[in-house]
Length: 336
Image 1: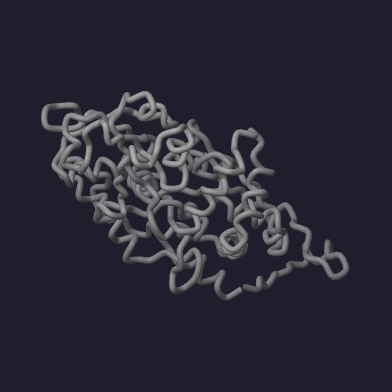
Image 2: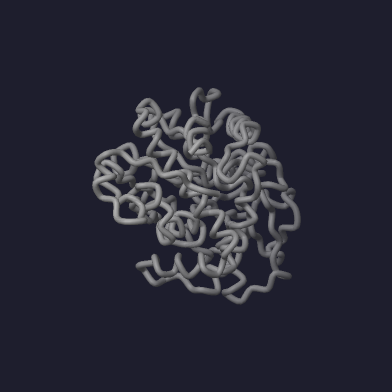
């Protein structure tokens, strides 16, 4: 993949012999991640480290997320130009008045699942009633709630339903047997359970993909107003083009990608072993869209909408969204 760099007069002044343009102030762009620095976001860190953003004439700031950071609130408040978010959260936020729009879709598959202890008595979803299930909130609960509605299980703790434990972003409830099952990602928390000493033979997992309730996860979102500005569309196209180049490099060079991620982890909390496992699993989710990395499959987006609207008396969204995703940026990027 070759990136074609567009130079304006202001940038030309900063050219050095045989080099790329030096990003100017108007070429600054801020990306807000959904979670902390880890291999889940390797493509963006690789794009910055390898100079792909700089080659595109961009000065990209990557802001790590965390348990107290809501990407939609950050972009609504002007703290970012682009955010990484899950489509269920983005669509629910859009219906509430924050006009998020998907401009690229990195993850083609869902990595979400429930991980259960076999000794809890859970062998199939039919065993969920009466059990305590750990659930992430802050926008991550929507796929779970829809799944329970599909199964006909109430989530308010009443008889015949399930007891919902508002799960922190750790695996303690399963390790301490406070819950029969907890929310995990194929690339992260499941392996934290294994690393804590629990054997895979002691666990059973239920992948949302297999249960028919998968929704689109890590995508890139901006605000409607950005797509109404031709200059911003140009900048976003450069960003997406360079980011997808970063993702393709990360998938092809996982060990180097992990090294770059660890170098950007200011907390020092991540370990090389865990990040290598994560990168291997993340590569499976990035997958291959026939049109290329980052293209949103309209059919997958429509399935996500249908899933979120099938919540009975309490759907995640109440009507089909209009303008919630756009191919404008990807199409422009493809022509660069």
